[in-house]
Image (cartoon, rainbow, N blue to C red; front, side, top):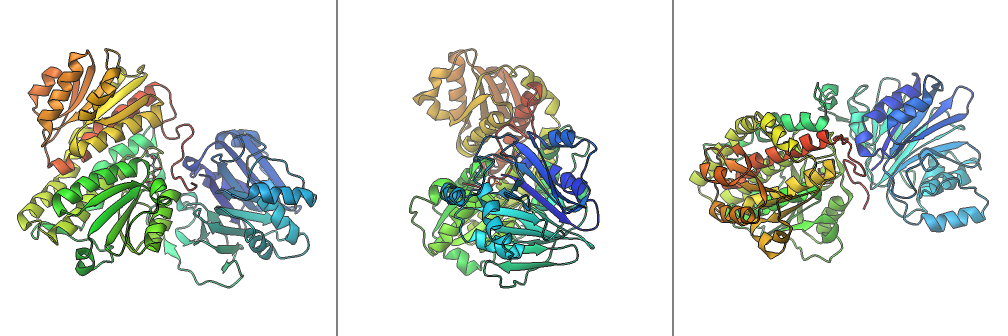
Length: 611
Ligand code: AGP
């Protein structure tokens, strides 16, 4: 998903938008570009394939001077990741420059019509149709905002766009449908950006655009309109995070920093929410009364990627402790399969970014069908957070590394809090509730204990650097951890890996086992421990190499496993918070040894804002 930054003010715009863009690089890094409206009233455009550093090298010291500019980092959807398809795109006469995040679904039809009307296209992108559509009205005298509104009424699909024009030199017009965009309010200067990290160095005051809104931004003011040019009143939000939280803070990678931040991110997720005396929790943002929560007869959790793995753990928790029928749905499947939900269904969307297009659409679909919706979200003010009926913020702080780590463990903690809330309203006793609350409170310390074993995990990683396949196996609450471990390895080291319920192995994957196939078992001493031990013996019997995540003091499995990492004891439902940590570190160290770009793995992006 692309990153957009725009600026208008008194300062030199080029360096400002480029600096902001660097903080958005985790959103996509196939190509980057910049457009500056220079002192002579012309738009100068610079583009380069690949990372922003390539654009910086291409620019060198010849930064165009100007006070209005746009910048864009791309995650290619339509058209190869090359310099021609890089944004910004300009119109036929060079009057306009436009950057876009999203997909224009009817671009081919619009393009054919525009070519018939004499427009000349330079790129293969869907985006370029937008700048030519705006050109049609703007060059006939229509104000930029009106021309943009008229153009957008012709397009199907999703967009976050920003446009500048030589005819309105101090104006940036931005608009959103489906892709996140905000206006950041400075002192005598204003920005537009895909997310707040691009502007935190300058201001914390932001206005989030909603779907169907257009922002007309000038140095000293901004107006928010809808597509029919009606003025909209908007709230100015103050961002909590500061610049330091989005710096690497001395770590080699954001991913390692975020792994090591987990004791604190968990403390933040639990702070002020644990009520040990009552054996329950306080969740201020649910926006649902106990009556509402008691009317819930079925829970559907929907998400993508790592968040979907957290949802699987939430399903197990909800059924075990709250005894509420629960299901987990891939958001991309749920939204198109005519799902059965009603006013007694609680649909919980789990998303770190709060912007994942499929999860957002699944929640909108659930709402349309009468369900109550909750969001378990990390990014404050994100679209999912603003559209659901209620929710739980993770307070994990910004997660910049594309591979999700601290958000995952905080999602599990948040799901445990929601489960306690639902369970204590039903059959879960105060004693059971107190025990879960006590174990939750101990987690941050226990996480720090496991993370102190990083050097040991690094040694294990040494022996897996040249692996071509890895199998992850777990049962019960740790089956989703097997999936998560495999995903982490795949997405940052590019080694093929699969996660499976350990017992499923006998129904196929066991054919893969030989002395070259490393098998990672997640085997804490929980309710299914003995079953997992049998599975380990089955793998050992076929010469497999076993790395096991075990409970401290477990000498039994120690004899069977080739290598192991110990984790402290806790309740079964909370073991995933501890057992996933060695798997995050394992993937990290293997990827670093293989020379992979850990924070910005190939072909991936941090939040997937298109379908
Ligand atoms: C996980 O490491 C990946 N970055 C990806 O699978 C991610 O979990 C998925 O895109 C969902 O993102 P979200 O939590 O922001 O919705």
